[in-house]
Amino acid sequence: MIWGFVGGRDFDTPALTELLRSIPLTDIVAVGTGIGSEKFVREQGPELGLNVQVAPVRSDLYDWPFDGAVGVPAPAPTRLMMLLRVDQAMLWATAREAQLHDGKTKCALEAQITDVVVACVGGKLVLMGGGRAKQALDIVKRCQETALYNKPREKVTHGQFWEVIEL
Image (tube, rainbow, N blue to C red; front, side, top):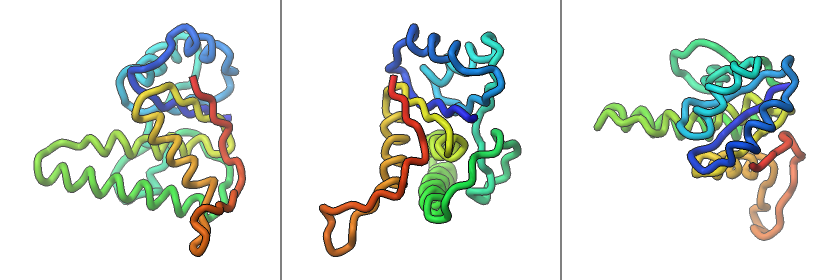
């Protein structure tokens, strides 16, 4: 199983350490290059014997020359993958534009959130506080519910693709 960790500076260290210790050593931990809780997972995971892999996790979602992949996520419905690809494309386009104009690529880190979310389809997504966790939760909500065109207050639920754990 793949565990995805997304978060920022606002996290509970003892609770996160306890959760990391409860992860089976055969599972994969996917995490981004963010600071705070993600950095904590990148540093503490290997010390606990976990297989920690850093995004990019699904380079096939975008045309960007990165190597590597984190495990093989569970097969996902086509609609889900289309939504995630749109999310990824928007973030990478924003990052590329920023890189061309002023050299700042903040959105590249935000695109990693989509990578981590995609990696743990069929697994567990751990949200550890902060803006990155809120963005991951928005991605999950967009992929699991769709508002009807002529009745925007009514939503169609497409299924539960992740087990979301909020710390």
